[in-house]
Image (cartoon, rainbow, N blue to C red; front, side, top):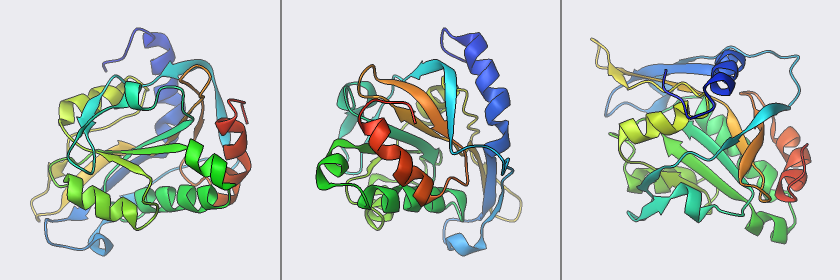
Length: 221
């Protein structure tokens, strides 16, 4: 597995985050998300925020946003509290639930805090997730969410630098497409642009809402 310079830290993160690996499949290019299937394992006893012993830098990725423009993740989000999630729009459960919960939590914040927070969704299925599709899908939840798509190898390397497993989509014999990706949300502090905490799949909107003010202020929940 390829990692950044913190190989040991990434390896430890992979072991810890394996509980949230999602294998999503069952959709073809015309089928609706309701025909997909998802398998997710999580530890119900885990706290909402998992504090990382070794904070992670943001992945050095230049991708395409929902307007078709180039988006340099590191530069565009510098100095901003940022939530980062890897997923895809045909996902039947984990991805829409996670993004919806974040949107609900964000909507409960004061307007100034809402404006300060950047939420980035990176597609793990870039062949199907065009900028326009990403824009429509995310816009139904929160029009301020940043959707990114582009070269799969770049996306996979960026995810793996965080210890997040992302595999190339596989077309099955029945025409369905299986997309395997980690289901954790990385939270970056505006003070040093590093992820000090992450959230596992299953974190509720209430839990996000309780923690977001601290993340926006650069404090650890």
